[in-house]
Length: 386
Image 1 (cartoon, one colour):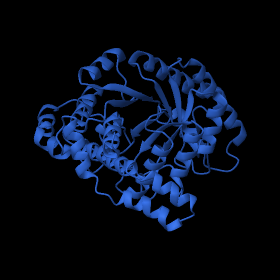
Image 2 (cartoon, one colour; image 1 turned 180 degrees about the vertical axis):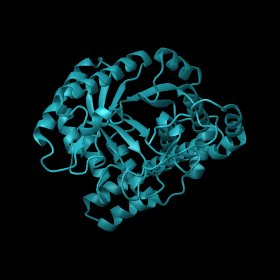
Image 3 (spheres, one colour; image 1 turned 90 degrees about the horizontal axis):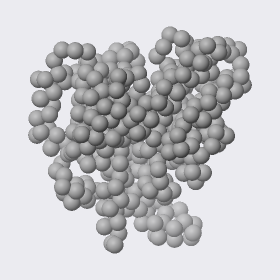
């Protein structure tokens, strides 16, 4: 197989999971902006996700968020997804929108609140059983705002106890993906603030617990590709949340702010075997001013472009330059790949997959946007609230 053929083959097998909540109304921390044609229930979210997969060919799974996507029959929802050529992906828990969680959820000083939170996590595992999902994705808003507000060490003990109970409930083919976030809404001490804390808990739990890296959850200047490389080396990278940011957790379209960073991250993913391992590549974005479906299609395309460039890195030349200590030569190898226009290559890939080479144009011509605006009248639009 030629190098070009190998790159094409890898791109054809790539999969990017889209988030159900990105199809609903979203906005800033201050207001949720409504759009016409937005889904009113999880089934309509899946209908929109099917269009993303139809035009990109690499978005076969959809992550759910509970209770935002709560239904009476999850098996029926999984069948609805299958009927549209999709599968249900990660089940995301929500322990941050209930009044009881004002001082935390699984780390709360009150045992009754901790019990409420853990019961919700166990409910999510039950939903995994019903939908066939393999991943439970956990992010906790837990933390403190003031020194002395609570015992930092005790909160870590409570977190470990809760995670252990949920871990024991997982099936043999299920896993727990633990996400971290530098700050917000806790501003003094966040209980899972960095990859080291998440890694330490996952390491103690066992092989079914792995870390999720979100691009926006780091201090400015953090070398995210180093974190990715390290977690892959330790076989503890379970998932990657793609988005972009300028300041903090902006949740912008992936590749919009710093496409070079995205390329560097994808190179380390490929270098560490992440494309062939069971790493869940997911979008986690908030489309507040742009149209939902086209924004998600563009995000998927941006991931594809960064991946294609990373696959084109001349590894033998890079290895030779690195061994020789040729600093500029090694950097030039990476820059040559990053500077390559991979759009013609991706058009070829799509045509060989039986897809329109222009996903954005194909969606615009499909009439789906006009159809959902005309048909989705009345009812309560889906959204994550604010």
